[in-house]
Length: 430
Ligand SMILES: Nc1ncnc2c1ncn2[C@@H]1O[C@H](COP(=O)(O)OP(=O)(O)O)[C@@H](O)[C@H]1O
Ligand SMILES: [Mg+2]
Image (cartoon, rainbow, N blue to C red; front, side):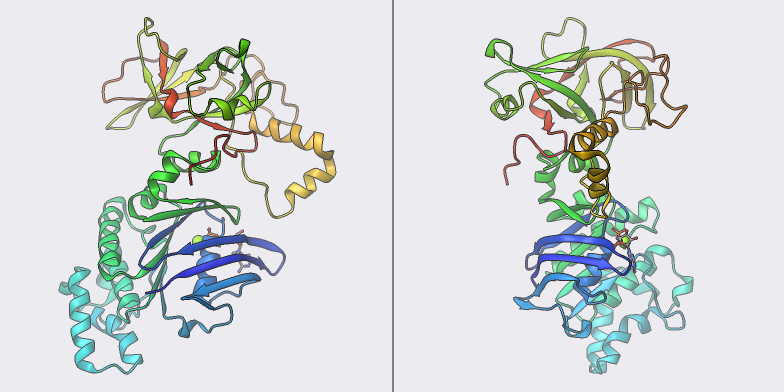
């Protein structure tokens, strides 16, 4: 059993790459904590610092209440599994599983019992006499996991252990990892870039981008109540609709989210109304998941947006509709790049220029916007290549066909509102 505390931990690689930036995080005893984030955001670096394979540049690592920055890896009682769990090719599965115990000069009877027990739990007991070369990818990863836990470590670190497997095997092994680490009660930190893996496996998720922690919470907390637009977008299984709008409060009767061609009204009774009203006269970003939108007839009286169906996309269990609604859709704002780009921009543009540059980068439509430094060719000024700016999740039988006029009901309780820098306007309840 183990607790892990990262106190303001940073990692700068030689050459000045800031891979992890002032990370504060705690993994509780027996917890399955998933580290989630896009490729290159510093997940492996963080895991390797916890394992003692990478030096910590600044900040403190605490293992079981003890500062462990300089502790040799072998004293940490940590086991690690990588994407390609490397096995000894000339040893059988049994030999691979037994190896860490043999090195530790364990009693041969104990080795035999432990290997038998573990191979059953991992469902590789039929393969004990085979060599790794004759196993499937899924079986090899099971052996790698078995070899890591056979010594009964107090901390289990897994770095994308399923990403080389096919989808079916990934799902199967995902469930088994979950059952196994919970049955053993070993504190586990599990790295992945796959949001489904994170949501299905984790007790809590810590989500990173560019070396910076973005949000921590249970899967339900960070899915329903994300701290930033980046987190909301990263956890959306379909592309999150993000739209810029101006906040207005006509005669103080209600709050108006003004998208130009469309408006949505938020009543004062809405719990977010006060927080949004603090931005009256300013631009904000509204996030709407495709499943917070649904097709309705023209006679529908609630909050709606409307447009024309550009394309329908078949996903087997559902259809997605891509609708042109003339909304100013934006990309999820990235946190400032810790590798000096923010400072660079500031120097070049002064702060007014910096904000203009950010807004220009954010606003990806409509295409007839004048964006002077846009790569040529992709943005048309004619308006004839308008991109779809609203993605709506439909059921298995779509209500529309391409080209149809579309009216879309908006579930206002599921609107997410962000400042232009991507931070939440109504702070998450954590
Ligand atoms: N040994 C290294 N030397 C220099 N830069 C590195 C090294 N390892 C990783 N990096 C850089 O650090 C950043 C984080 O990498 P990594 O921790 O591997 O991310 P992830 O595991 O999230 O994909 C990346 O920009 C990567 O290029
Ligand atoms: Mg990695």
